[in-house]
Image (cartoon, rainbow, N blue to C red; front, side, top):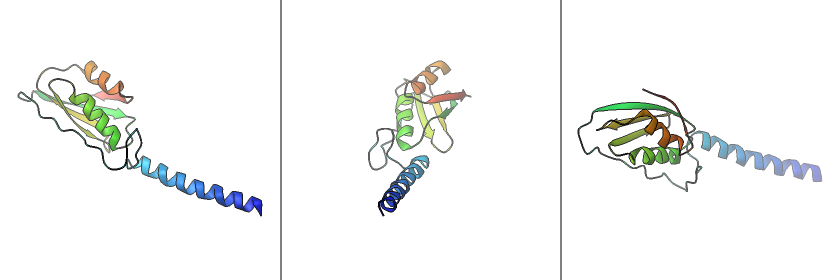
Length: 119
């Protein structure tokens, strides 16, 4: 009888853990220090005329809190404005002055993500 109770308790725990993992992988969980609800993802307009765009392929983003973190990091660079996509695993960075690939990579990787490529 005691064994059956232990098995039932373990199964219940596994169901709840599985639901949490599923939500996390879909980007709906409150991981990465986020709380309940959708985080405020900042929007930034460039001060000058847009000179071009760079697309950063990024791994390690799991949720909208990750998107907000990467967006804030890139937007702190003078002359850069980011639009980050969790589904595509990328950030499209518009810029109104020259910004090195190394600077973009550094701010993203300093937040704990990995830049695979910059085009």
